[in-house]
Length: 203
Image (cartoon, rainbow, N blue to C red; front, side):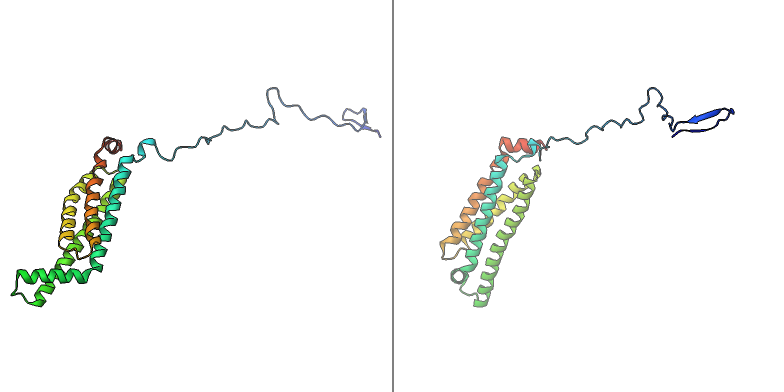
């Protein structure tokens, strides 16, 4: 349907119902253009959990395993000593009475209890302290292996006293304490091998 009406200049304008087209964008502009995609910031390559140099060499793991086994053997030996306390007290009491017949029974009993407590306590304390040094060695503390080596001598002396003086009639305590000393003596050797030294230096 067409309509007519006056225009601004006074002439008759025919309305055909058509509407003007929207204005075109200026040259060089794209109003409907989307922004370019952003580059990916995350990498799909999985990073290693630890650098190769941080992996413990076989020598360090072997040393720790030997020392832990020695600690277990020492604990078994001390437990056997405590379980065989009656035979141990009887033997030590007879030995003390033979060496000093004038000593009273109460004095001898006190001496036996003190000896057993000192030997067992010394071995237990040195074993616990050595476990701290082993944990530091596994954390790549180079100085800890030297402290562990320094702890080895008193530990061996305490084990020797324990197996010779505080060992009762049972063979388990003596065998376990001797085995613990042998394991401790062998355990420190791998810590000074070439692979272990290079691992500590690379920290």
